[in-house]
Length: 229
Image (tube, rainbow, N blue to C red):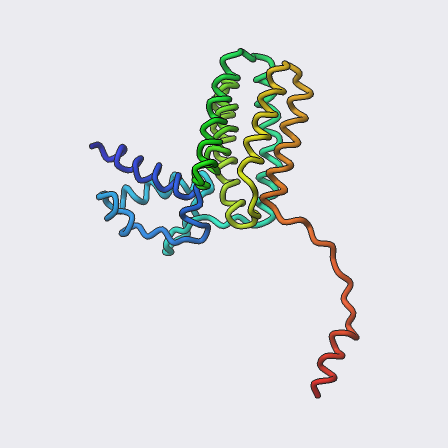
């Protein structure tokens, strides 16, 4: 097997493990341990980690062990802002070039999501929920748009791992079916609105609500210390 293929196997396995949250943000990715598992050199492992770093999934710092990236809250909000823009463009392209077989492909994917959820395979259900959006981009027929959206969706899995709250898997499949139904009408404005609602729901599940600043009463704080004297 060629070195590029061996490195790609390590890359694909690590990427899926990160997206499915088997490797959580902050996990150390030791080159020797990964190399021993896949039977490849540290050089090939380093190449795989570099690819993941370029996608924002791995953090590589000089003279330190690579780790699964931990997105900051500010970065998380920026990622969702970009995702809204990309997904809107996907919907524009899909409604302009819609064909019935596109709906069939999307329905087949949603059935995979539902099967994973029914079997209790939450890791696969979560990954498939993200991949639904990548399938949309692929059907839209723009390779560069697909590439960028794939990276953004993958990074959203990290955001969910760090900040997300538990939710019922059926939420995603119900919302995805709503997107498909809107696309089938050929109404671009309605389809974009449904997608926006879905993404806002995803964002709400992924990010904590902004907390209103509470007024600090200095006297209340100092009272505790005065009483302790």
